[in-house]
Length: 280
Length: 305
Image (cartoon, rainbow over all chains, first blue to last red; front, side):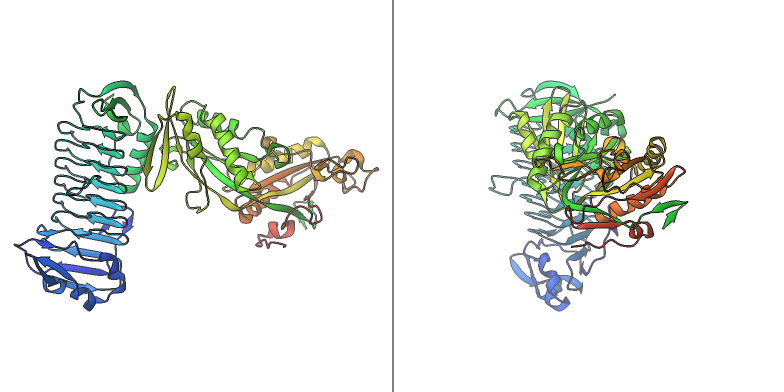
């Protein structure tokens, strides 16, 4: 497999032995430490199933060791928390996976060939999370009880996402190739959310200094005021970056396009903005 | 040594260490990127009087710039990193920020040494500026009257840059000297990592360190290469030579300067040119010596001290 600009050569492969019916919590797996561990030591690490700790080797076939490049494959939709707090290295997930992928990650890179569940990239602080499919609710949002969503890093979802993406985020970039559910970037402090599909209801509520870039249609809330229509140089830079770094397909009419700048949210009051693409 | 009948003197160009940045200016068209770059590099021929040396390095098609617009790269040199920051703030602030449609990016992103010129210039936004981070690099969106000025927060510093690479074109007359110098400049134009900071890439007023007559002068005319003074000074102008022009080069590395000197000297060796020499100051000026024979042979340059 390969993801944009890179050839991925896993040094460790974890293959799920059988399709799981109970949730598997892999959030405690120290993927960063795999570089120091051999195959046997990795197999002895523990994951949790139904409140019990189980050796990783009982659940996954472990191949390889001493590598920061990890591939996970199998029917993974019941596997949650993969890549939690990842700081370095690369994790490639072959297929769809459960909730909380990349939660709290501070660095490194996670690539998911399928879709992800809820809470992917919550409270993320750095690194890159790239998803080929869809994502559930609260992508890049604040964790349970958390005051802040993602504070750094980049999330790229090529499909659509659920509700509350980017809630309370401060810094960081969320890119969504498809559409979004309700409440995109609610209470966003800063940071940027780019949506190429249709933006769901109530975007940018409580926006303080964040940016929503919408190219596929958005209903501007009444608490935003139109400033002007212009060609934002940053959008041009951003779109070029997405094309070159993530191989995203962005039309020249968007890269060099004109955008309406709506300032808000007046209810906070905030200095945020919604940049709405104007079809030529 | 000779190239097409032109004597290559057995001497060396003496150069000195500098600090440098590469600034990439993009705009809606190449015309406007050039306008900004030309203003930014104005009055920047010599560190002696201009406090920096700068010139356009090359032009870029949209496919090679960060924002997919036409662009121009500028190299700017000073003697230390502090000066580099001050000059960048002055020049970007007065010439690129003011120029319609431009954006400004770091051209040395891999450098660990940084100067935060964008961080200072963001204040022009009077609190309305917006910070964005992309790929680990921070940019500032500064509101201006045609929309926004986008610039990178920090610029990478090349701490091993070199200033003062040079060669002299000794010709039968001024017409042939200028034609040879123009050919050299054309050959060097667009080479990566090197600039020619003087007007049109050519200097006619080569200098020596200090002065004979005036003790307060940092530099004065290089009388040894002034054809009008041959009977009056310890002249190095050969018989039959009536005009001398100098090509001065600043580069991000010794290799870049040597490569450009090699190409430029070769282009300058044409009818009407008697010899190629180089300016050195007996080791008073700097630690880098570009021996013409080594440069032409493509041998690696060694730091003299």
